[in-house]
Image (cartoon, rainbow, N blue to C red):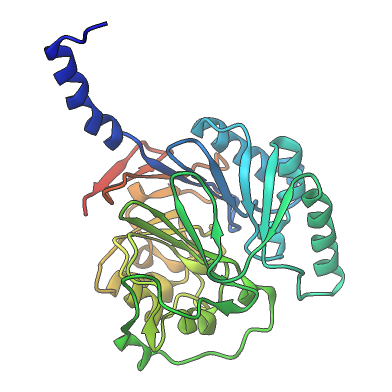
Length: 337
């Protein structure tokens, strides 16, 4: 069949537009101060970082399943467990009863062997037996279609050499004082960099201050990012100035709870950084006060007593353009690169 010249012209002209319409979609699910970040590639492969809390009548599993339904995915292709604390791994067994999980990704055995740590880890391992297992180390790749997902940290270690284009000296290291060493699972967190074309997002789980410092000091081994998920729910034992200033994000998302995370110190470090990122919050941080919270339009859950569990959604195209959407009030804002 011959294609008429005009039709051929229209088809060719539409091709770039169709490409541009394909977005990477990221849902920041409200699990009340835990983490559940659902990443959906343009081809609808899914990666979930953590699954919130256990119990609570399947609350967090149901919320993640609802976000997955909204995203048009029916399974979790890669379940990344950043570390083995209740607000991150606790919801995995329940989620596995809600949605098929194909591959479980973690840093290896938990280093916390008290009664609670052992219980959480054993419950996770039992759930993990329903799928494949990847134990990752820094520098490994998680093979999500359309995306480049690099493991930056795992098991207390970080990438040994800088990523392509990174490696510049970090002037903020000198003024960042180290804290006491963290012997907990937080410091073991699997941290990842997600790239889609020129778009870059970082998620370091609950990695703590000194380990973040090691990642960017004396040289910044990561480079700049477009989207920064504040580490450890925006707590002040994470998010040192050295990493925030090195990454220079254009947009930050804080997965805090109403009374967990959202530290005024972290909010201020972000607010004062060179990139001057907009800060979007999953919850209004009650104890931080209005001066250390973002405008109400940029907060998914603005009322502590409101249990509607609204989420934030980020859509990014391969050119680095970002749109952030608040499901509570349908407010959205776009950022061009």
